[in-house]
Image (tube, rainbow, N blue to C red; front, side, top):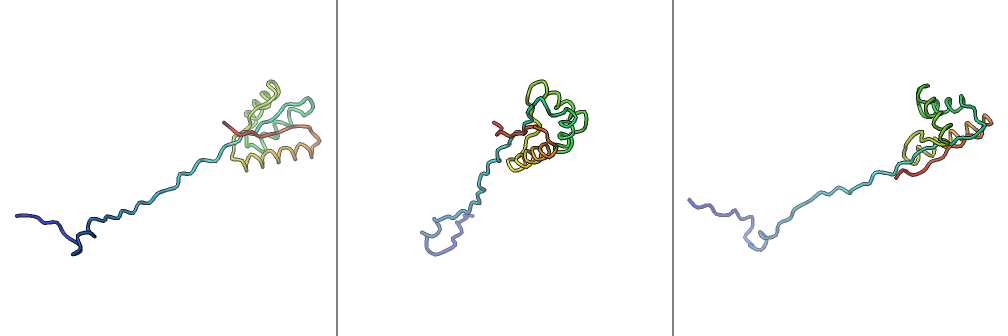
Length: 113
């Protein structure tokens, strides 16, 4: 028994043309992350900094206290890492809250490498 190739058309040139549909996914890069930093000053009360960390960064009292001590001793501490929009919002919230309570507390953000 001999098997012959199954021809789809009478034109042999058409059978040599093969079409393959390939679905490609565009490669998407993850958006860059930004560190939110709290800076030390000589005027903002420690209790206020703890309150800010609890309120805007969802820390419990012990976590907030530890970060506050790091800010106090080292002059700066990373309090969270977020997308650009969230980091920007957090910085704005902290700065506005500190201003409304007449404290010079500074909060900034920088791109994470």
